[in-house]
Length: 449
Ligand SMILES: NC(=O)c1ccc[n+]([C@@H]2O[C@H](COP(=O)([O-])OP(=O)(O)OC[C@H]3O[C@@H](n4cnc5c(N)ncnc54)[C@H](O)[C@@H]3O)[C@@H](O)[C@H]2O)c1
Image 1 (cartoon, rainbow, N blue to C red):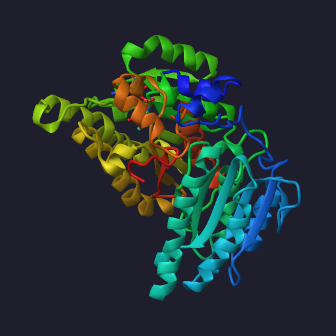
Image 2 (cartoon, rainbow, N blue to C red; image 1 turned 45 degrees about the vertical axis):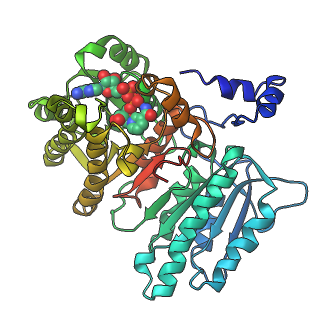
């Protein structure tokens, strides 16, 4: 799993060799340690700009200041920009897109390593006139291309599509996309709406203090990192995995002061067993992370029916069945559901017809479920990881593994912690405006881009 190229590219002497050989030179990506930060943009030199005629700038400025940012409308001499926030809601004609060029072009050589860019735009669906809708859609192309250009710095660029009246919900997104925690999440579109009713505000002691979260497949990989991250935010975490993973599961739960639960999620009794367990122990839960997943890769020509069946059962059917049970009694109002999809579900992948089918299903699932849950303040989103360094990807043969690792804007694989950061953000009160979204944590992978 160790990435030798990343080590060599960041070694004082070996870096020259990597360059001389013409190999990709991945930078060390910045990652946050620990839990809740009241001011995640503190100390970040933040440039805040807007296209003329927009409506999100005041909310963007308030969110940035609430997050502790030092805000400038122009980058001071001698400084590099750590965060750039730009309100593009004023872009409604082809000519207005010049404001993107005017704002970003001068900054391109003045971005700090691991800089963060967040652009706010209108949702094309909310634009009455076709030209305004096309212009709003154009901004997505700009952000994705920008993300690809700045990815070699470890920097990220993301887009918030904000519905009118939902600007006040930008706080959480500015904290996440403007701060260090959105490592490996780039070129993504976050649709912010006012549909999901907001429940409680964040507490200062820990944003999930007093809340109960369930993470399936928690014994290792992304699940273990997510359990840890949720615990850092103050949640009590119920760590679920199969009997074969009992030892690491119990170790993790003990370390996090959480609760272990041995359960195969694909069994017929799993939904009722999980609901009975959480009801009896905690009176319900607040966060459900459907992380457990399996691969059984074969080309379709060589795929036995049981390989198809197992993958659909664990990766899709089990999730829907558990949610049915939890929504009938178990998940409290204001709760959060996060499903682990995959870029394979976005773009398809050779040898993964079963897996891609199951993961694409989750993209449709969260979109279709979101509206019905909004009145209860419950949001449901999917996270689609790209190449993440876990035991699952360690099994991939060397050549496709190297390709998966390098074919993205930062020329390296992500860490389980990166996906855990995104999942945790979607579990926090500050993400109340997001529901039905699928967000990739793929370092802007070329596949599925
Ligand atoms: N690692 C990646 O690059 C990557 C990329 C895209 C999507 N994902 C998705 O992210 C999720 C986590 O991936 P990972 O790489 O950490 O996987 P992993 O294989 O390292 O861990 C998965 C965990 O799920 C558990 N599990 C499997 N079947 C289960 C069942 N029936 N009931 C309960 N637990 C079960 C396993 O025991 C294991 O602990 C999966 O859904 C995966 O499809 C991962």
